[in-house]
Image 1: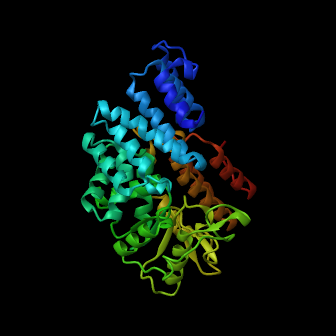
Image 2 (image 1 turned 90 degrees about the vertical axis):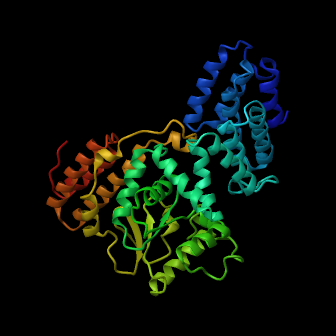
Image 3 (image 1 turned 135 degrees about the vertical axis):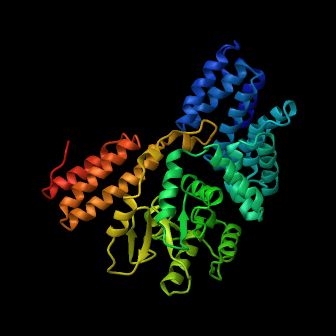
Length: 429
């Protein structure tokens, strides 16, 4: 039986197909078990339990949509089955829309299934994606997962009003954890004027865009998601919007194996369009032709900046590429940035309406850990220069920040204590 046939049979035929009892009371327990697995990003294990829960209670459209969402996301894990899984996800969500035409969750599932960014299947359509995600937020203005997809697509389409509304909505509903907004504020405050700030994921991109839109924070900074630079259309849109030059070979660029590529590792590393564009921008900056500094989020993949210049310099909230002979840590900049932190601003958990299993399975503490890691880099650099007293003082500040932010992972601070002890300093246990 194919994946699609099995999924459909589970929610139409019931226990005979799925092995679940026909008792409707089982559905809640099965769905809760599936949700726990989904929240740990164990989608393969969650999928059959959602299907069994729907078999136990075929009237439960919420479970049907979680099954559709899980099916859609699994399509990205299994390229050979992508089309079948996406078709199945759409079928499940369309079944809900027949009964509830303004179900935001259903429109979001379908919209993201059509998103060409997530896979080049035969029915991928940016227009269909746009239509369904717009329906989703019209039905429920706080449908964060739909706004998550609309903000960058609106930017690409030149729909500035939609882009701005999405940023405002995501910010107002606290869709992203407080730690991501606090980190974005810290980074934006520290970046050099007119910086081109290269981000990587949702958590370092959307909160920064929202702060710029809602609070007017550092609108001089160009926030550019490097994942979107893998697409020529987004690359052109970014360049036009921020008045940045591009290499002539955007349209003809071809992926190649290269140990300096940011995708993959070692001999299997691939030099992508994003690598190509960033290398060009860094070269233009080095020769004084870009007119603005390039800075990377510390959450970028390691080789996104490595190999593209002699030295990658850590400034605390961000990194830059510098000429040979530069210090790998900018101690004065770190000192200034770390002194501006408010640990309590980093407190807070996930928004339960965020359905991303990656984000649900990732502790917001991980974002706070970016700051703690900056303290450790700073302490390491001080120890290397023999500035033990300053390192001890920085450790005290790091401990206070961690306590204020409710950061509980001891490993980074333990490492910092060991560093100080190794150079003859004293630390509190």
